[in-house]
Amino acid sequence: MSPEPIAKSAKVLIVEDNYFFIQLLKDTLGSLGCQVFVARNGIEALDQAWEHQPHLILLDVILPEEDGFAVAQILRGNERTKGIPIIFVTARVDLDDRKRGVSLGAVDYITKPLNPPDVLMRVRRALLRLQLPSLSSRLALTDKAREVLAGKRLAPSLQEKLQLFDGRHTIESILAAREDDVELLEFAVRLLQGGMVVVAGEGPAGQEGAGEVSSGEPAAF
Image (cartoon, one colour):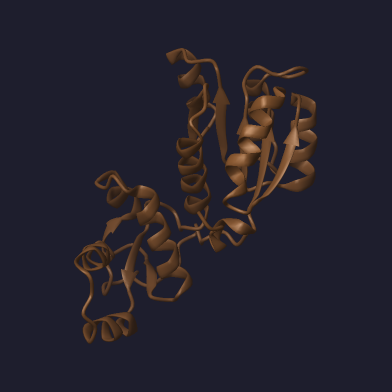
């Protein structure tokens, strides 16, 4: 897989004390071309999160100094780091541990042993979601985009995707109904970057409030 422009400038912090898993995660993320930092204990994790302001943290639970849950709680309690998405990467598979991770605001929970393609998919999904407005917002094709597309013969799969961005559905509802959510996220981000869609406000596109950029503008890596 060639590095995606969307992820190439992203910063990812790996918090892991096991050399094997550090190397596995670094090799896995290598195809994205993002900048990777490594912390080997909870204290290092907090220092690096404050210093580098990563776009994503892959956080082990069983760590020296402070465990991953404690690290996540501290990060969430600090204004500088509270918005950084966290994916727990751990050997702890109990349902209670998963629930605790979710309660601490984790966007995902990956259990060991690791499957590199699965890890890559989850990391891509987390980074792509940062590029979108609030998932409760609606994306609508611009009038200019409709004019351009009207004169083109589109592949059925592309036509199907474009029909999802009619201003009536939230990103969250679109993704919930689709299995290829990573591909759809990439597609939505590219539409936004190309100026082909606008972020609908309080009403469906074309009504009052449409066309306003929501408070959750896409993040710039």
